[in-house]
Image 1 (cartoon, helix red, strand yellow):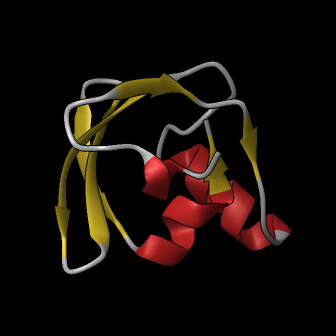
Image 2 (cartoon, rainbow, N blue to C red):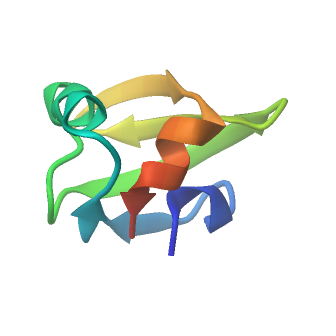
Length: 69
């Protein structure tokens, strides 16, 4: 399921990254690797704040839809 379906406070493991190569590379650079744990911290105006690898990141809904957990 896409990361956008995860509720704030829940943790999930990344199973796959989708989208064009450019977006996959950007997600990999931000720390979203297959098997890494992601926690949704909050949802603001459709965008997500997530915790991944000791960092907090804000990502758009479009990017979050490309991260499958």
